Image (cartoon, rainbow, N blue to C red):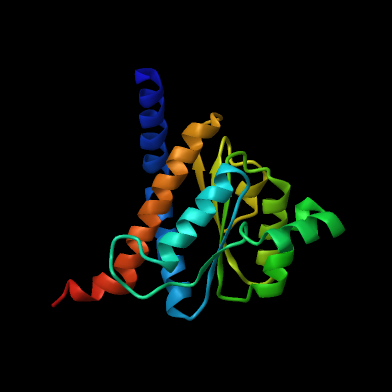
Length: 191
């Protein structure tokens, strides 16, 4: 048990050291999208899908600060859409088609993949880029294919999925906190 905790701590410290400014940039880009009446889309598979839904809930409901709901949409939640696209076309298209239908210039896509190689996440990022959507990758390992495709890559340099996921959800919580600060608290600091 102690070894697992120590591994987690090491990955998280390294991730934050490598990505602190990138995490702040991610929050700034998301805050700018919300301030401009745009949306945040999130996608991922398995545990990363759960992280996408978790973070969308933090934005729509609230994180820690009482504030108005923010327009965040997890592309992982509509089983009818996902299964119809997967059945009629390809599982690789389940997020990309949703971006084609709903994404517009000025939105942000937070793409979560512990390998950086999930085909359906890669396809979503490609479509988002063509639509003028700013893309952020929460990635693992060396960043995979997504590292060179996203506008901003936040990479937990580890190949153990659980450790990468732990770093990702911490980064997600920090992004939520900073976004709330930028939108709702920063202007109060000068009073």
